[in-house]
Amino acid sequence: MKPRVDWFQVGLFGAMALAWLAPAPGAAGGWLRPEVLTKAAVSLVFLLHGLRLPFDTLRSGALNWRLHAIVQGTTFLIFPLIGILLFVALDGSMAPELRAGLFYLCVVPSTVSSSISLTAVARGNVGAAVFNATLSNLAGVLLTPLWIALFLATTGATRPLGPVVIDLARWLLLPLALGQALRPWFSAWASRQRVPLGVVDRGAVLLLVYTSFCDSFAGGVWSRQGAPALAAVILLSVGLIALLTWFTRSAARRAGLGHEDQMAAVFCGSQKTIAAGVPMAKVIFGSHPALGVMLLPLMVYHGLQLLAGGWLAQRWSDPIFPINFPWFGSSDYWKGQVDMLVEQTEAMQAKPLVV
Image (cartoon, rainbow, N blue to C red; front, side):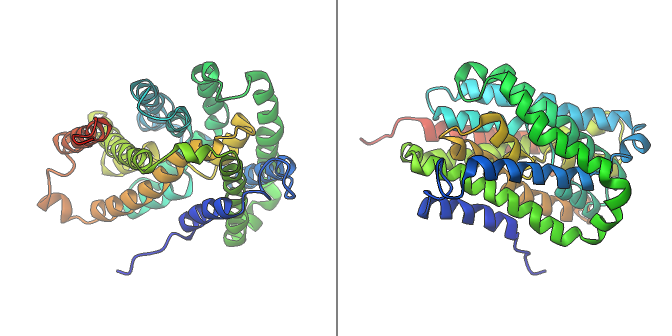
């Protein structure tokens, strides 16, 4: 089968490259007026989210509480605790803005479209995936900034909680609520216009990525980063995907859930959203000069989770695969992979043998 190009992922790195080539228009004070344009883009993204999120599924799908507890607990408790451990463990060996970005990656909600589509490919419980993706994105509007305020407030990476709450209500919650209020009249239209609305939604996200990286490039923040830092982010992202894939499936198995619910747990519990993560970062961190660097872990994780998730979904949808490779889904296999990545990360941080 011919590999499918993820043009959104290409666009993300294209926006980053454009910010490197021409940072002045999107930087603070530039002719694009990012202080106004980004707020409009954030509001547009969450208006479209509210218009498309099926809130009524929260009522119809609330009974499978064990699955929901695993997914939401992983997204908003296990993931953030891992983020805290990484933030503390990497002190002195990784730049503060990258460590803050890793923690931010760990506290954003799950994806909507990819978690649902991957669950469907893996012959999982699509209804449960829709429920958990919807609940995660609604809860994340409150829980993500709360985690940031509780943990990163002392680092100076985020704004004071009061202004953040006001801006969240104004630029995120209000458009989200408006979108939900308009669903009785426009949900059918939004379903028919899914493709063009998706282009508008993702275009707004790409604009936010561009303006975020413009400030970082214009301020010279990237001059302090190098190839080893990027390699460390990639390795840590791979390790997180492997660890959370193993954890969510193991937890679902221990809870006595079947294959369909296990697939929903894996793809909703291990995925992270860039579509909501970038707009929330613009509100939470404001015009922080290193915002582009802080978003890098989320961008890297987003690309890797699509690659890993697509491969896993195809494997798990094949009834022959678990028969011939029973070791693949075992805890020992994933533990070995995580241990190997930890060893590689430690080796990269060690002093060179030859000076």
